[in-house]
Image: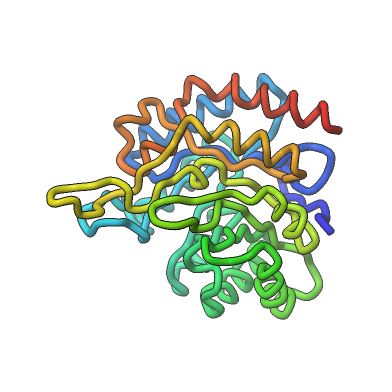
Length: 284
C-alpha cells in the first residue's frame, strides 16, 4: 500500500521516492536545548536538501522508575514546541498519553504520535484520529513491542473507521520484546506493515534494553541501550523498504536525562544521514 502522505504547508512527505525523516530529541529538557538541537538539525538537513519533522516529547509517561525524568509537562512543553515550530519554521511531531491531551497537541503538532505501549488503547487512538483530522495533520502509531506486524491491521481498521475519507496513518517499527531486557527488529515485518500504511523505523528506541539499568540491590531502575546498533538498524530498515527514519540526538548523549544509552550524538547527524541517503539511493 504505502500511499504518499504529505503535510500541509510543508515540503515533507512519506511513502514516495524520498525518505520521510523524523529527527529530534527524546524528551524536552529545557527550551535552550530544544532550540540548540532543532537549529543544528535544520542546518544539516538544509545543507543536504532534505526536509524533516522535529520530534521531542513533553512527557515520558512510560518510565522504569518513579524517579526518572519525565519532561516539562503538557502546558510548558507545548509552548516550547510551538516556539520551535514558529521561529524555525519546522513541522512538529510529539506523543500523547491521555485522551484529554489529543486536541491541545494536535493544534501544535503536525503529526500526533501514539506510543508503542498504548497502540491498542482504542479510545486514545480514536481521540487522536478526530483531533488530527480536525487540525489537518497526520497520525504516527508505534507498533507495540507485543504485536506481530500483521496485527497492525487492527490499528489501521480503527483509524479507517473514524477517518474513512483521508489517509492519515503512518506505522512505526521499534522492535519486539525478545526475552528479558531485550528487543529485536524483524526487518521482514516492514513489508507486512507497508501493506497497511507508510512505515518508519525508530532505530533509537529499537536498541533499548528495557529495564536493564540496574540500581541498588539489582533493581531495574532505567532502560539501557546499545547506541552502536542504531545505524545498523536504520540502514537495514531502509534496505527492507522503510519509508521513513526516526532518530533521536543529543549534544552529549551520556548526559541526556532520558534514554541516553540509545540516542545518538548530535555531531554524528550529518554523517549518518549521508550514509542513509547513500544506501537509499543505491537500492532505488
